[in-house]
Image (cartoon, rainbow over all chains, first blue to last red; front, side, top):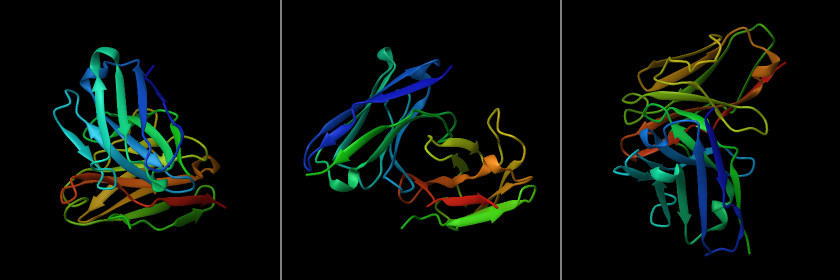
Length: 118
Length: 110
Protein backbone atom coordinates (compact mmCIF):
# COMPACT_ATOMS: atom_id res chain seq x y z
CA UNK A 1 0.00 0.00 0.00
CA UNK A 2 1.36 3.37 -1.02
CA UNK A 3 1.80 5.73 1.92
CA UNK A 4 3.07 9.29 2.05
CA UNK A 5 3.51 10.84 5.48
CA UNK A 6 4.46 14.51 5.80
CA UNK A 7 6.05 16.08 8.84
CA UNK A 8 7.83 19.25 9.85
CA UNK A 9 4.98 21.74 9.72
CA UNK A 10 4.14 24.12 12.52
CA UNK A 11 4.07 27.79 13.49
CA UNK A 12 6.84 30.09 12.30
CA UNK A 13 7.36 33.84 12.20
CA UNK A 14 7.61 35.79 8.94
CA UNK A 15 11.14 35.55 7.60
CA UNK A 16 11.71 32.22 9.32
CA UNK A 17 12.50 28.80 7.91
CA UNK A 18 11.04 25.32 8.04
CA UNK A 19 12.00 22.00 6.49
CA UNK A 20 9.19 19.66 5.51
CA UNK A 21 9.76 15.94 5.09
CA UNK A 22 7.73 13.24 3.38
CA UNK A 23 8.32 9.57 4.17
CA UNK A 24 7.28 7.31 1.32
CA UNK A 25 6.53 3.60 1.43
CA UNK A 26 4.73 0.91 -0.54
CA UNK A 27 6.32 1.66 -3.91
CA UNK A 28 9.74 1.99 -5.53
CA UNK A 29 10.32 5.61 -4.53
CA UNK A 30 13.29 6.15 -6.83
CA UNK A 31 11.25 5.58 -9.98
CA UNK A 32 8.67 8.36 -9.55
CA UNK A 33 8.79 12.12 -9.77
CA UNK A 34 7.40 13.78 -6.66
CA UNK A 35 5.63 17.06 -6.01
CA UNK A 36 4.58 19.41 -3.24
CA UNK A 37 1.14 20.99 -3.49
CA UNK A 38 -0.29 23.41 -0.93
CA UNK A 39 -3.72 24.64 0.06
CA UNK A 40 -4.28 27.79 2.05
CA UNK A 41 -7.14 27.65 4.57
CA UNK A 42 -10.45 27.69 2.71
CA UNK A 43 -8.72 28.15 -0.66
CA UNK A 44 -7.90 26.08 -3.72
CA UNK A 45 -4.92 23.94 -4.61
CA UNK A 46 -1.59 25.50 -5.57
CA UNK A 47 1.28 23.49 -7.01
CA UNK A 48 4.57 24.35 -5.31
CA UNK A 49 7.39 22.26 -6.75
CA UNK A 50 8.34 19.12 -8.65
CA UNK A 51 11.44 16.92 -8.66
CA UNK A 52 12.17 14.12 -11.10
CA UNK A 53 13.15 10.62 -9.99
CA UNK A 54 16.89 11.30 -10.26
CA UNK A 55 16.65 14.96 -9.21
CA UNK A 56 17.75 16.06 -12.67
CA UNK A 57 14.65 18.14 -13.34
CA UNK A 58 13.30 20.51 -10.74
CA UNK A 59 10.56 23.10 -11.13
CA UNK A 60 9.07 25.72 -8.83
CA UNK A 61 6.01 27.90 -8.78
CA UNK A 62 6.88 31.55 -9.31
CA UNK A 63 5.53 32.36 -5.87
CA UNK A 64 8.22 30.28 -4.11
CA UNK A 65 11.12 30.48 -6.54
CA UNK A 66 14.33 31.54 -4.80
CA UNK A 67 12.91 30.83 -1.34
CA UNK A 68 11.99 27.12 -1.39
CA UNK A 69 14.22 24.18 -2.31
CA UNK A 70 12.94 20.70 -3.11
CA UNK A 71 15.17 17.66 -2.69
CA UNK A 72 14.96 13.92 -2.24
CA UNK A 73 16.93 11.01 -0.82
CA UNK A 74 16.08 7.89 -2.79
CA UNK A 75 18.10 5.68 -0.45
CA UNK A 76 15.88 6.79 2.44
CA UNK A 77 12.61 7.05 0.47
CA UNK A 78 12.25 10.65 1.51
CA UNK A 79 11.19 13.93 -0.06
CA UNK A 80 12.00 17.33 1.41
CA UNK A 81 11.00 20.97 1.05
CA UNK A 82 13.30 23.56 2.58
CA UNK A 83 11.31 26.77 3.04
CA UNK A 84 13.19 30.00 3.74
CA UNK A 85 12.10 33.63 4.01
CA UNK A 86 8.59 32.50 4.85
CA UNK A 87 5.71 34.91 4.33
CA UNK A 88 2.23 35.09 5.81
CA UNK A 89 0.85 34.03 2.43
CA UNK A 90 2.79 30.74 2.66
CA UNK A 91 0.37 29.63 5.38
CA UNK A 92 -1.19 26.42 4.06
CA UNK A 93 -1.49 22.69 4.32
CA UNK A 94 1.41 21.21 2.36
CA UNK A 95 0.77 17.90 0.60
CA UNK A 96 3.40 15.48 -0.63
CA UNK A 97 2.24 13.80 -3.85
CA UNK A 98 3.45 11.02 -6.11
CA UNK A 99 3.60 11.61 -9.85
CA UNK A 100 2.29 8.51 -11.57
CA UNK A 101 2.54 9.73 -15.16
CA UNK A 102 3.55 13.21 -16.29
CA UNK A 103 1.92 15.12 -13.44
CA UNK A 104 -0.88 12.64 -12.77
CA UNK A 105 -0.67 13.04 -8.98
CA UNK A 106 -2.12 9.72 -7.92
CA UNK A 107 -1.23 9.49 -4.24
CA UNK A 108 -1.35 12.28 -1.67
CA UNK A 109 -0.25 12.44 1.92
CA UNK A 110 -2.54 13.76 4.65
CA UNK A 111 -0.71 17.09 4.63
CA UNK A 112 1.19 19.11 7.18
CA UNK A 113 0.07 22.58 8.26
CA UNK A 114 2.47 25.49 8.06
CA UNK A 115 1.35 28.65 9.82
CA UNK A 116 3.34 31.83 9.23
CA UNK A 117 2.33 34.53 11.67
CA UNK A 118 3.92 37.14 13.88
CA UNK B 1 -5.83 34.79 -10.82
CA UNK B 2 -5.43 31.28 -12.19
CA UNK B 3 -4.55 30.68 -15.84
CA UNK B 4 -7.27 28.02 -15.83
CA UNK B 5 -10.85 29.08 -15.24
CA UNK B 6 -13.69 27.02 -13.80
CA UNK B 7 -17.20 27.93 -12.70
CA UNK B 8 -17.29 28.34 -8.92
CA UNK B 9 -20.26 26.03 -8.52
CA UNK B 10 -22.40 23.41 -10.19
CA UNK B 11 -25.35 21.41 -8.97
CA UNK B 12 -27.77 18.68 -9.88
CA UNK B 13 -30.25 16.24 -8.46
CA UNK B 14 -29.45 12.56 -7.87
CA UNK B 15 -29.27 10.67 -11.15
CA UNK B 16 -28.60 13.76 -13.25
CA UNK B 17 -25.54 14.49 -15.34
CA UNK B 18 -23.36 17.44 -14.38
CA UNK B 19 -20.60 18.92 -16.50
CA UNK B 20 -17.76 21.12 -15.25
CA UNK B 21 -15.75 23.19 -17.69
CA UNK B 22 -12.11 24.22 -17.53
CA UNK B 23 -10.90 26.94 -19.85
CA UNK B 24 -7.24 27.55 -20.59
CA UNK B 25 -5.00 28.53 -23.46
CA UNK B 26 -2.58 27.31 -26.10
CA UNK B 27 0.19 27.02 -23.54
CA UNK B 28 -1.63 24.63 -21.23
CA UNK B 29 -4.81 22.74 -22.15
CA UNK B 30 -4.31 22.92 -25.91
CA UNK B 31 -0.83 21.43 -25.76
CA UNK B 32 -0.62 19.29 -22.62
CA UNK B 33 -2.53 16.67 -20.71
CA UNK B 34 -5.42 17.75 -18.51
CA UNK B 35 -6.06 16.24 -15.09
CA UNK B 36 -9.07 16.31 -12.80
CA UNK B 37 -9.06 15.95 -9.02
CA UNK B 38 -11.85 15.48 -6.51
CA UNK B 39 -11.53 16.80 -2.98
CA UNK B 40 -14.10 15.68 -0.46
CA UNK B 41 -14.51 17.90 2.60
CA UNK B 42 -11.61 17.57 5.02
CA UNK B 43 -9.64 15.13 2.90
CA UNK B 44 -6.70 15.15 0.53
CA UNK B 45 -7.45 15.47 -3.20
CA UNK B 46 -7.94 12.35 -5.29
CA UNK B 47 -6.95 11.90 -8.93
CA UNK B 48 -10.06 11.31 -11.06
CA UNK B 49 -8.89 11.72 -14.66
CA UNK B 50 -5.47 11.83 -16.31
CA UNK B 51 -4.35 12.07 -19.93
CA UNK B 52 -7.67 13.80 -20.72
CA UNK B 53 -9.84 10.67 -20.45
CA UNK B 54 -8.09 7.98 -18.41
CA UNK B 55 -9.40 6.90 -15.02
CA UNK B 56 -7.16 5.44 -12.30
CA UNK B 57 -8.14 2.08 -10.94
CA UNK B 58 -11.15 2.39 -8.64
CA UNK B 59 -12.62 5.54 -10.17
CA UNK B 60 -16.11 4.72 -11.44
CA UNK B 61 -16.93 5.18 -15.11
CA UNK B 62 -19.58 7.73 -14.11
CA UNK B 63 -16.68 10.18 -14.30
CA UNK B 64 -15.42 11.07 -17.76
CA UNK B 65 -13.12 13.69 -19.21
CA UNK B 66 -12.77 15.37 -22.58
CA UNK B 67 -10.81 18.14 -24.28
CA UNK B 68 -11.53 20.40 -27.21
CA UNK B 69 -9.00 23.04 -28.16
CA UNK B 70 -8.24 25.22 -25.17
CA UNK B 71 -11.04 23.83 -23.02
CA UNK B 72 -11.64 20.64 -21.10
CA UNK B 73 -14.64 19.18 -19.33
CA UNK B 74 -15.42 16.73 -16.58
CA UNK B 75 -18.78 15.00 -16.72
CA UNK B 76 -20.37 13.24 -13.77
CA UNK B 77 -23.25 11.03 -14.78
CA UNK B 78 -25.77 9.40 -12.46
CA UNK B 79 -24.98 12.02 -9.82
CA UNK B 80 -24.87 10.71 -6.25
CA UNK B 81 -24.76 12.37 -2.84
CA UNK B 82 -21.19 11.13 -2.33
CA UNK B 83 -20.12 13.21 -5.35
CA UNK B 84 -20.54 16.42 -3.35
CA UNK B 85 -17.02 17.80 -3.40
CA UNK B 86 -14.68 20.34 -4.90
CA UNK B 87 -13.35 19.49 -8.35
CA UNK B 88 -10.13 20.91 -9.77
CA UNK B 89 -8.71 20.78 -13.28
CA UNK B 90 -4.95 20.99 -13.79
CA UNK B 91 -2.40 21.08 -16.59
CA UNK B 92 1.24 21.84 -17.25
CA UNK B 93 1.75 25.34 -18.63
CA UNK B 94 4.60 25.67 -21.11
CA UNK B 95 4.86 29.46 -20.77
CA UNK B 96 5.08 29.39 -16.99
CA UNK B 97 7.01 26.09 -16.78
CA UNK B 98 4.60 25.29 -13.99
CA UNK B 99 1.78 22.92 -13.15
CA UNK B 100 -1.37 24.96 -12.73
CA UNK B 101 -4.65 24.20 -11.03
CA UNK B 102 -7.99 25.75 -11.79
CA UNK B 103 -9.74 27.59 -8.93
CA UNK B 104 -12.06 24.67 -8.30
CA UNK B 105 -15.76 23.98 -8.75
CA UNK B 106 -17.97 23.06 -5.82
CA UNK B 107 -20.53 20.44 -6.81
CA UNK B 108 -23.72 20.29 -4.77
CA UNK B 109 -26.21 17.45 -4.95
CA UNK B 110 -29.65 18.94 -4.40
